[in-house]
Length: 109
Image (cartoon, rainbow, N blue to C red; front, side, top):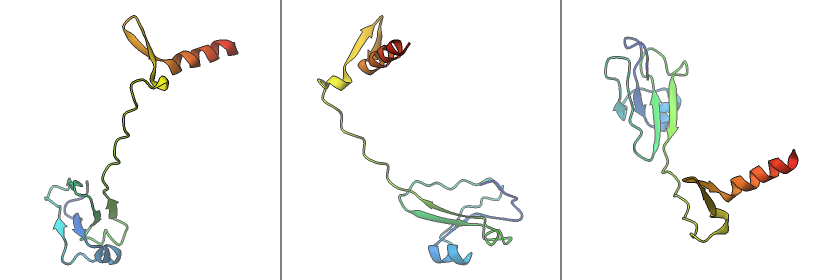
């Protein structure tokens, strides 16, 4: 967050305080005095951030962020899957689908 340090701040509040722009009893105060503050979003949860001073929250200076776990990676396809076939040409591996696309283009012209 970048803001005028003498006019605003960044605080984390609960949902009720977020809705009403109530800066009393914040969960955390992320302001460090320079007006260039970072909020680590490294916990899976919903963050409610507002400017608790200068009336900024009432003017729209608030942010609701939902941090979720990333989706699981898809399982690897078996090595003998024909859709994964590739050809080696001069040290480069070219998927079969590329040859099919090139053949389709050549047939078009």
